[in-house]
Image: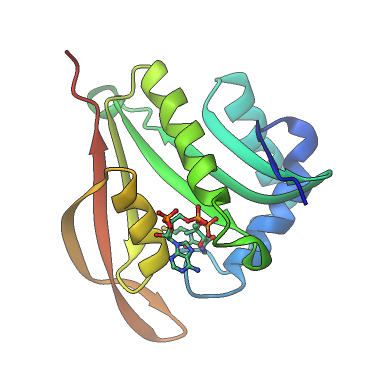
Length: 166
Ligand SMILES: CC(C)(COP(=O)(O)OP(=O)(O)OC[C@H]1O[C@@H](n2cnc3c(N)ncnc32)[C@H](O)[C@@H]1OP(=O)(O)O)[C@@H](O)C(=O)NCCC(=O)NCCS
């Protein structure tokens, strides 16, 4: 099966939402445990397309099987910072799709003048953390009890990737 990586398009919104909902419903990795309503996801995608935000999807045929985005902050003094969100459907993990998605986003974020890419992951999310480390992210902090899922607390790690201009 050939999975292609493309910039997101409004036509992908519904399938992207299904994918987001599937990963969120695992209740292990993301801060949300279900996807927002379709109108909200459509509005997010529309905004990203209009503002040329770095958001890519992995497509198996017409189906979105993974996504990554680096959304820039809107406030003046932190507008150089972009925050990562990503996920790959469970049946598609461990095949390099996440890496391709994130590499595409990072390249686009740099080209748009973002100079700090940041993220937060559950401290026990070893696959995600390994991917970030392989792409050069460094650990900045541990947030104790950064997440609470089904009444259980989890530490989270904050990581960043800086663009050092010549
Ligand atoms: C994190 C995630 C997006 C990675 O996507 P992926 O397509 O599985 O990752 P890749 O196949 O590109 O692997 C990239 C690196 O991650 C690590 N990794 C991924 N899957 C792994 C697995 N099953 N076993 C061991 N390491 C794994 C490897 O270190 C790999 O590096 P390598 O290419 O040098 O071996 C995916 O696992 C996922 O969706 N997880 C649930 C959602 C999530 O955690 N989102 C991020 C929240 S911060």
